[in-house]
Amino acid sequence: MNDLYYSGELLELLSDSVPIEDVKPTINVTSDEIKDFIESREHLECIISVRSMLVAQKSYQNEKRFLCPPPTIELLNDEGWTNFAAKFASQLRRGNIIYAGGDNNQNNEFLKSVEETYYQEATEFTGVAYFAQNKQGPVFRIIFGGPTKIGILKHLFITDASKCRRTQVAADMRFCCGQFIGSFKSGVLNVISKPSKKVCRLSKQCQFVNIKSGFDIALFSRMRTMMSQCKYVDFVGGDFVASTEKWGCLEIYLVDEEYVDVDPSKFQYKEGILHYGDIVKIVASESGVSLPEVKILKAGKNIVDDACLADRLEPICQMHKVCFQLTSDRTKFLSLESNLVNISNAIPQEDGTLKVGIFNIFQIVTVIDNKSTFYCSRDVPALGVTPLPRIKDIIKVGAGPSFRLEITGENFSPNLTFWFGDFRVETMHKSNQLITATLTEKEFNHAAFRAREKDRCVYISRDDGVIYPSDFILEM
Image 1 (cartoon, rainbow, N blue to C red):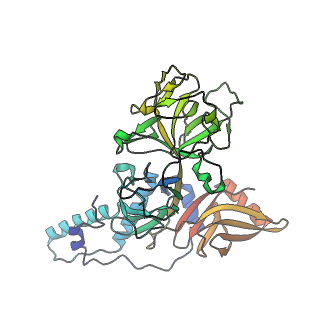
Image 2: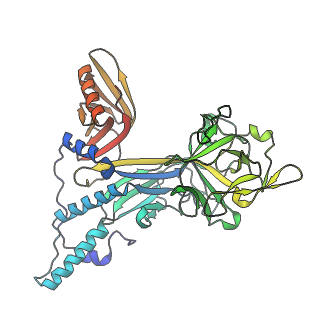
Image 3: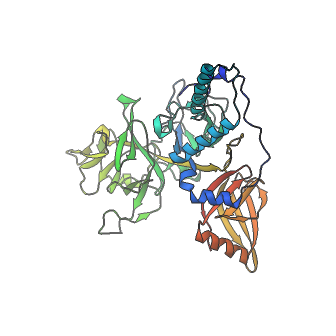
């Protein structure tokens, strides 16, 4: 892909082109358009995932301490993005792009081939990333590698001079011809100077420092002799792998040791902050496949003391170095020595401790996977598809023949329409965080019945044809 939005030759040939047709007045999305999307949702929706860690370590003085694991932008559901690009290519063709030139057939054939090349290049995806709270800072180009449509921001860093305590990674996505798609943000990154080596106190101001049961994490191994080379745990093709390129979202659970099941794949988990010595279960977020139950232990210069009672009082913090000991054999530990996550043996020492290898030592950090989903039922809007409205809660207020629904969230605007399945709900815009709807019991039951028969999700549409599916289900 070219480093510029346009290649020089195409810019010269397209300089006399007629622009895409002017923006037409908007018409609200119809019930038929919602139905068409619901019926073919898995083929049409575009999902963009912006993955990042919960904490980000600042650089020291003039060094560039790149964020690790690196923030990642991934375009999910390839069929949806392919259809999205095809829709935009059709939109470009309708713009009647005409080139200056004579009637020479050979010249026309050449220009026609150039036009097709333009459409192909113009509808590829690109973008730039930066820290949302520092738009004057460095900007990094997003390059999607290969057919997987994954952009890894390996060279993102926070300078020592930065005063931000919290920030976000913003990804401005475009087609390569320059057409804006939208601006998508990561979760909040809490900026730290260095990983804490002291016992962390559980204060409200720094709760983000601790690793909690049920949260998403990333695991990686970074040796001092290989600072430019990290190995990340990912789940690919049915296996937990040690990847040098891509990291995966994993879930970590605190196992309830009082619960026993004959099926080793089943377990009961508890909420709470993880401490050294706890039994945990690590699960691949997308597939639900898990590693064996392991005990999480403190790793200190390749020596592990699995009998140290003092460690059990210490909570596990972001970026700490840990080891994972199999509960079935105290000498066996998870390892990243090969291309797969495997098991290797520790060496018992005379004092009862265990000596582990460098590939048995992992760094652990909580991560956030911010996903955005949309579909353009009409043309790609000139101003893009963002900001995306998001629903946080739907509360039913009142009883009797009529009642009110309070929909709370973010990025609500007056030009949005709410749907229960393909049933349109009349709403009132109160603020960018609150929408209300007054319904009779009959209307609600009718909407719930229709949604139950087809699709019970709540959808939001914008008056220019963009549809935003939500994860909220209409409850009877």
